[in-house]
Amino acid sequence: DFDNVVRHISEYAGPLKDRIPLVYALEGIFDAKHEVPTSNDLIHYYGPPGSLSMVSYVDAVRSAPAELFKGKVVFLGKHLPTSYLRSEEKDTFTMPVRSMAINGVEIHATVAGNLLEKSWIRRLPPEVELVLLTISVFVLSYILLSFRIVRAGIILLGAQAAWCCIAYLCFRD
Image (cartoon, rainbow, N blue to C red):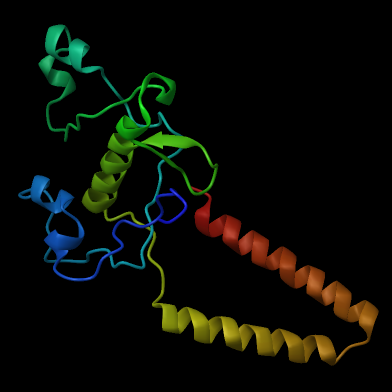
């Protein structure tokens, strides 16, 4: 996104393989005939940076047992502190929730996991979100204007608490 925060699986419309080039790498594993993410859907991060298991390339080549990689998709990429890299070499982005730096290879692995598990965050179409938000604003406004100020304030605080609880329940894992 414009603020260096990676939220969406793809920002582009068009054929699936043009929108998500990773589908080429997952061919034979990912079945694109079924549900696929839209440009409105979001990446489901599995946790903070480092949540996915990583092995250095040197360790993988020299000493890692073959069973470690059996039946897994392997991604190669930089996983260095950004202080070691020149600005044009940096492949770090910001996570949307915790504002922590995450490497590009970890984002690609997360998107691949989302595609394989079909676990990306599905959003309603923008038009539907707009209609629901507009309706909820008018309904809440009507309810608040029907009461005296103290009772309306209590209702407003309750509505805000309910909104926070629902948002937490939707994104807790």
